[in-house]
Image (cartoon, rainbow, N blue to C red; front, side, top):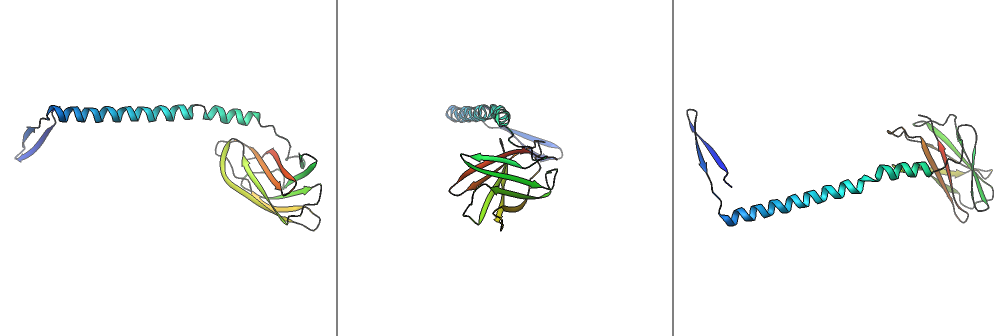
Length: 177
């Protein structure tokens, strides 16, 4: 290996000096280069193969999730054993990036004063989106929140509510952009 260095002498002329490496230095440099290329190719393979099924897994996950309510037409009902809860969202149509009122009605008395409604998009992380539901006098839980717009155009969302001592219910619904 012979790198060359140029040095300007003035008046447009250059002097070129060649530097020679010894055999030991060349072998050492070559070993480092080979090791670096092997590590780089391994990283690229791991990245490609680890991401190769990501889209397929995401699509399969989105396909296997069944929508259990049509929130655009009526309130939705979900069960956990014998426990039942009803979710209603207003105003309709339920749109993204709009202030919405969430109303959850359990079929039995719940001792908790506040509940958390977690909004999530199945198969895609859209950030943590929690709506605090406050208990009203009639036993229903009310809160306001916003459903974010997904840049991919997907509209399937889930609302999960954990009722202490009763169980967790999950509502799956579509929103309008």
